Length: 418
Image (tube, rainbow, N blue to C red; front, side, top):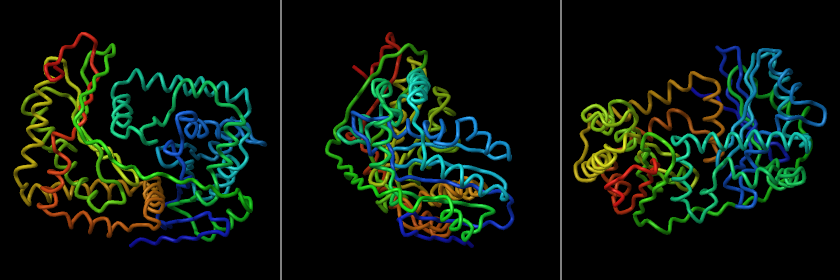
């Protein structure tokens, strides 16, 4: 049984928690409902850059002291930026909860944004950008979302551009924080050896009365073009990397659960249709998987694989053949139940980690304005029918709506590109 507690403070901050009596540690996340989706071409990358800069010092702590204050008590501090959210989080033993809370509160409320640190960190993030550019497995997903979400801020890469990273100033960072990081977009989530009342006391002790409010207004993604496209990027690489996919249902669409199950059947796991047909039976790809990368109002759905240039055309043909089978033939109840059990098993196993539990709670609150229980999620998965899968397959696996994106060497010749 889930024991969640939720409080909304006068300034708008939400605090949610889950006490797990049998663990001695906690995971604490400070979430802002701000991501690269809230940027434009001129400041693209600033949310991720601010995430980096919050670790580079506050008005009374150096970067080293931030790390030392947490690590000296056996704790851990990190952060991540997505297209819709930013999370700063810490893990530690229960007796060090206050210290972790205070350090995170100091970071998000009193960043120094020293010009010399901005200059140094911009070089670090540019190196990170170059690493992505050198890694086709990462680069292809950024390029794919740039294509399918064209015309929307969702098309912008989280890391930004080298041009922007070189020009960000202290004033740019302070202005963006002032405009976007209001308490009405601030969520504190904790799981593990935590007491909700203790979190409320810490919030009262370490958070300012008012950090202001943000008036972010996100435009819903409106899909306007579903025509097929074939895009090729030439790079100095050995293998050919490919994505076949399209935009799909977001968290706000009840059909997303069926799409998730369809993705599981199609290409998630070694027993999936694509793994068996492309790798096991034909031996033409080391890695192949389907994906459903979801946002509030849309998702990036597709299949990713890599192979050599001689086999890319055959691999594409096999993938499209599997798509056709799912569009034309109902799957068996046995295959459907196997996929459901796999999804439920992965979810439940992940909940043995307090960090995963904290993240799941926070994302549920951010996307649905409440915490969905595991029982509720399992019930939703179990409700998917064979007909739901057939309907989802006919909507999502229509070859006339696919984007085909390939990264290859300049010398590779592809029949499918002809």
